[in-house]
Length: 180
Image 1: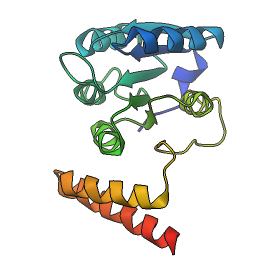
Image 2: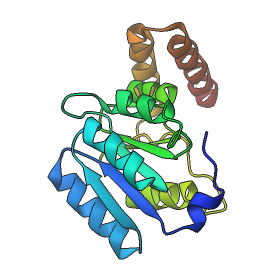
Image 3: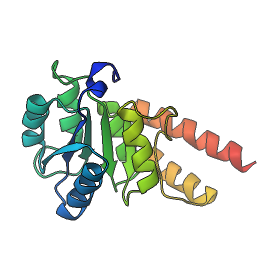
Image 4: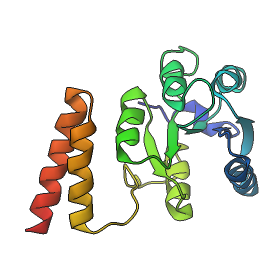
């Protein structure tokens, strides 16, 4: 979904879309300390304008934003010819169903809140073409297998589209097989 090509060889600018200052500020500072330039927005419409203007190397976006959601922002980026190849990391505390929706909208990677800083750096470095190995696709908080199976069954009941149901069934089957 993204191209490491020329964009990652230029100065690396990361657009952070987050409405919670207590999350936005530390992320921005950490990235700056690592040598990245950061551009920030607290809502989707401004973020889309900034993405067009700055053409960032990477976009980090929260899913729960005021006004237009992070999901619609991701979809808008994917349909904008000037920025449609920009790697996107979705960040959410809402759980795996939201991650599936984010990936369906066009996110390349999802990170759960609270953010595991080691996985965060792995994802950022990989998306910017600075890491060799790909990080885990969807980060989830640690749970027991029984809790995970129960959660997947609940997800399945709530899944609104056939694709989401099929993916939930596949993951449920994998969890059951791992417990045997």
